[in-house]
Length: 354
Image 1: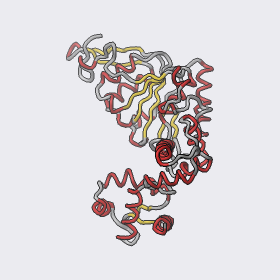
Image 2: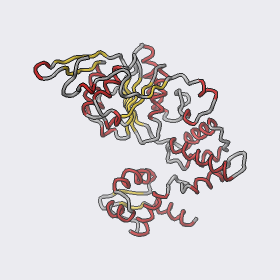
Image 3: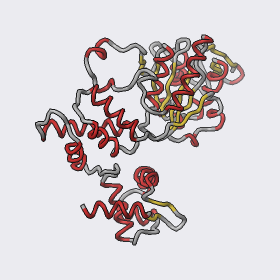
Image 4: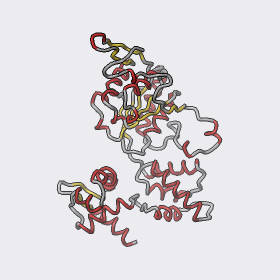
């Protein structure tokens, strides 16, 4: 390939092997994954194993069957929603349902043009490319993706000055699956090139209980149904947190008890030790609410004042701690500041009584 100028320089050319080596996930399980339960093999591999998100599965299931029936690649898919709800897992399920490999990368790792070029030129026909945190792509990477997504080609500038010319590389048909927690941060030209845009919502208690049960069975952790529900209640509607809490319960039970079956009381004791209460609030959440309630009479109080009182960065409070409190209805944001709601007051009072 000739030397590229301006946007893509000599150092940006893909080589073999490419500079960026994405994970390649085959749809077929490895032999050891079939015979030995693995903690990194908890992700479902088919729509039937994927619990919850019924409307999302219905939409994507129809698209997958239609693409297979036509012999075409699946249209590009954008998945957005809060972290931990299964965007990466859904990409792997799509690849398994299509019978193709899934190459996994993240936008922050695609800093230079050669990174995205190296990925695209090494794709096989109908393969799935998953880009996590796609809203963090650089402008150059986005511009390279536009013709790749629409026309399966790369437009490169070759040479410099008066000798510069445009060269086109044909790409095999592929499917780009982008995942983001901030759909509004994507540029309109990139967002409009996705044929399917779907949001993942928080999970209901019944789905979370089923997820905890499935994970417990895979990890051979003996849980009662009430114990599964107790974990589901405290995981903020997020499967990733549910699986993390299950591991902490397993550790606690293996060290502190000699019971063959883990009851709900053991789950409560274990998660109380980790300061996760019955509504899923942790110590940081409760600390924020207590400061507003006891020091400022329930509010309103400004974000900067809260940050100074708690010794936290304002952006941490706004993006990490407050969203779940707002979702639960324990906190309100107003023009005058933050206010504890009546539900938040009742929750604090119930905690302090205990």
